[in-house]
Amino acid sequence: MDNSIESHLQDQPHAIVERDGVRFTLLGTAHVSRASIDAVKAAIASGSYDTVAVELDPQRHRALTDPQAMAKLDLFQIIREGKIGLVAANLALAAYQRRLAEQLGVEPGAELKAAAIGASESGLVLQLIDRDVGTTLKRAWSSLGFWGRSKLMAGLAGSLFVNEQVDEEEIEKLKQGDILEASFGEFATQTPQLFEAVIAERDRYMAARLREGAREGKSREVLAVVGAGHLKGLAVALAEGQADPATTVAELDHIPEGSRVPWFTLIFASLLLGGFAWGFHQGGIDFGAKLVLDWVLITAIGGAIGCAAAGGHPLSILAAALASPITPLVPALSSGMVSAFTEAWVRKPTYQDMLNLRQDTDTLKGWWRNRFARVFVNFVLANAGTSIAVWIAGANLLHKLG
Image (cartoon, rainbow, N blue to C red; front, side, top):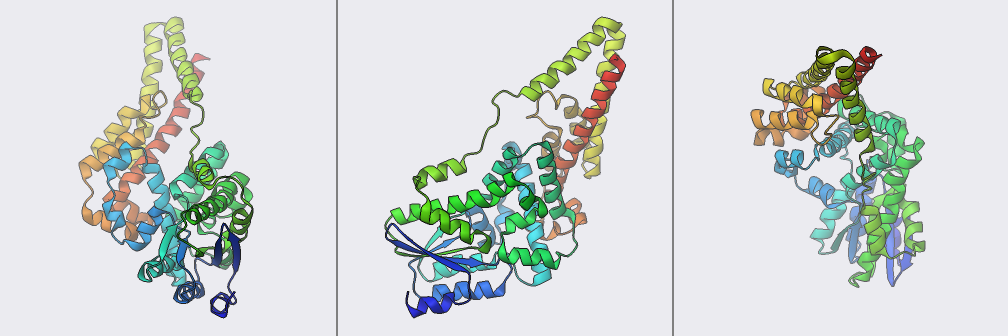
């Protein structure tokens, strides 16, 4: 290693792995450190590399380098494709990062942004090696049970609505960890399934992407800028991984579908319809009709209350009420999705709402003030209201049949 390389790596966490005729210099950075930004700039300015690989996926790269990225979102397409929950999760993570930026005066991920921009300005090959954050969240979600998913949602909700300062202990962890992991707090370190999806899998994924780039034959000296929390795992995966990199990438991009047969929905629907049928058989038309009416009213009121709590338009509240009674039978047609679509159609979020989205979602009131953000609140609270009401209505049905 020559002195120019030694100088810009001095006192910086790093590892060097040589494989397939390529030397990979892994530079571990802290996502909230000005020193890391300076180290990245110095490394690129050294002229020692022909390729810069960055711990970013195309979506995060676009969000960091294109200030107008949020304004280009198609809200109706997001709802139609069932991605509204995922986008809400991304907004929650972004809110957490903005709190860090305000407290520390450093934009989280600024060193990754500097690496991407520096590579382009220097005419170097830029390689985005991280997995799409949506895929990571979906794989984490699929690996967790009911309580794990509840804790995950609680962690994301905390990122959304808690405006308190991030404590010093958490900041110190960030300097040696990963920002996505830190967003979930202690839950990430205490839950092996979440750690596997958020950290370990991404180590293997990024190693495979680096090896894919090496196979193209255009790179001989690669600078890989990654969070310090990935440095050790990435170095091991890069040096020792034997599987075909394309196969590894495909496997880690795959989102488990779960059971092809919606057993819970089928069982629940069978019990519900069976309860109604038993009521008609045992108590006659009047009793059976009363059971059905109770179910419809309780679930409709629950969905309507959730939508109203989100500040929904009267038509959105009506849509939530109409959809709620059949949501347990047709999960794809959730009350939250129906009311959110209605809210977006009636209130028509403006271009300015989309431009203000990042700033407005910094505060709890901003989520209700911004018409674009309020669609997401509508989706979450309408579904929550319906879910609570379904349990109440189910208990009422059992009580009256007992």
